Length: 435
Image: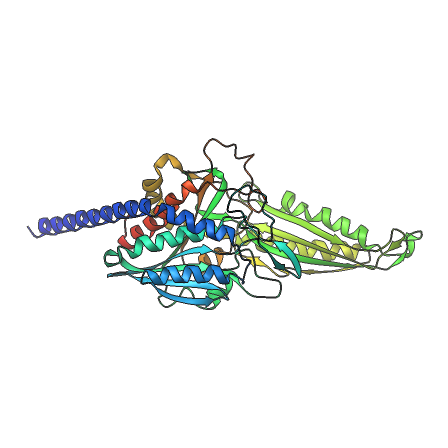
């Protein structure tokens, strides 16, 4: 009799929990549809008024004002210009963080949009155009929408929501700290201690209405590097009197590519070694004393990252030594992002939520990419899930859609409501412990 009573009570509470969650999901859907135009308007305002990393002053002011209007506890000037909002639910439960990035890029916009950016500003001492050419304007608008939706059902939330509006995802100005790394350093994942973090990135080459995801390594770790090769200067007519750092540099560049072709297990993960800048010499008839190269290294696991760095140092120094030159490698030189790693068990647990809001056929497993995201700094500390939201107009060829970081970058705004529903749904379902 006792076991039957226990089973009855368990079933009763399970049904009650399911009903509560279903009711919250319905509220999320209804409220999101109502505020769709507000989300679009926020995005257009941000798009027309972009600001570069660590200088998102106007942006931060708009976000903070909106969160305060919802009764959310707000902290500003986090990691320079970041904004944090804390929404305490009416019931005890976990702390869920949701993140959106804030900064634009030094790109001159070329779209015909009526709200296209005409902004110019200073970047590394030069006047540049400024554009939201990566979709961060969309991310902020979507998270502001999530804040409005969840605050309207505050009494029903089982836990706390921490809204993280992060500056400088594209990197802070040279010589400054910033971004997710600085936020973590300043304690953004504490008080209250965050249990899980969710984030999304809109994608201009994924059809609107679709969500893509990947468990495990989904975006690459990145290290930049500076290689300095020193030889012996001589007249260009007498190369035997020199130790030519240009020839040595050419040998180093070629040898570095063998790391991917011969040291990396390409059946498991991808990797990239790119030299993007090389400078040496002033005249055609002078062999210079020094060559400086800059490059980027991308990996999808910590083990591969460590292997690449070790091999790069060996190849650079030993290739130079074999020619009688010397070489120094600084890696990382100024930037390092860890692998963006989606916790596999969290991903599996939350997959039904994504399928419920988008439709099972619209939630697609994606390949890992060698682009990088500093959301990874949050994922290093707590389990996280980072998804991709379609922003390409239906029927467009992904190969012809303007890519991110380009002057023609374009996003279909009809996909924003799916982004709001996805992030709000992930938050509520995690709080409810839905399996």
